[in-house]
Image 1 (cartoon, rainbow, N blue to C red):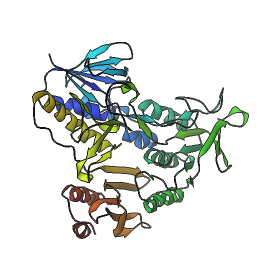
Image 2 (image 1 turned 120 degrees about the vertical axis):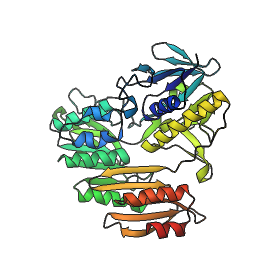
Image 3 (image 1 turned 180 degrees about the vertical axis):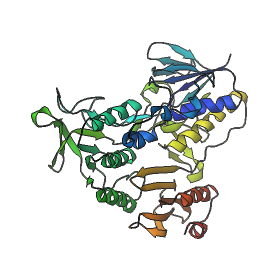
Image 4 (image 1 turned 90 degrees about the vertical axis):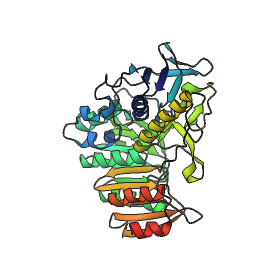
Length: 412
């Protein structure tokens, strides 16, 4: 019997497994995941899970695995892949089990970056009764943060103003917690948005009572006075007392288990334009980096929900083409980002370019459409605040190769 192994049981890996079955693969399908939980959705963890009166964990479960038996998967949950032998077509797990495969999907995702000296689950300082340094990547992380807020935490310092940090800050404020949001960058969400749009995010948080501090780094997190809480020291000399410190300074792709495997590793698993990483091996989701031909073949690694869905499905079809001798197709998506903060829905269709213009509304209103063009004047993306219909239209325009004039007419 033909065996396909899927390393990674989150969104991209589950989508790959689902599409493999939809495409008629009836062999053995082994899904490996390092968390003990049935696969679940991550975006609600920084939003609804923290703000709801009673979080409903059942609603987090991925629809594809609502009936665990439906896809006829051979699960390995609570087990991590620790090495890959390409020549032997084998994945080795942390308990020593070796899984031989005919095809492999690498979808092991990413893990949170940590502050210098921070260990997973470490407490502030040497910490006999110090506040725990929390992250927010997994369901267990969300449970800990929710428990801290429910337990009376009134002061939270969030280190990192990217998607997760900004959403955690917004959710905590909605729960009445005092929040300080810190980032070394000059503006929030600096890796995704242009500087002016990032400052609009900063203004949004300040308007909702968040103490936003930009261009500063955390130099130490120590136990607070009388060993209660934590004391966060910044490189400008400021000291911030906190009941909880949430670290959200980005993620790194989970590729350590692939060291020495022969796969190309460079800020992720590098694939060709079709998601193929090696013979009979594909990669998808946060861990994958590929040349997106829609944007000149530049290497991309996209950490977003839609990309995990689309790339997981594409990688599954690519692997079947590899096994069956079919015709491979390049993966040419239009990146799609969104973030819900307070009463704002922030959506980016495509990519940010060096040239930008607002064609509808204003940033001060908090409802606007901003277009982006590349160095050659080609329309490459649109940022939409509280303009969901225009965001959908913008994504289609980028996919269709629409001109900047067409974007102005359609979205303005």
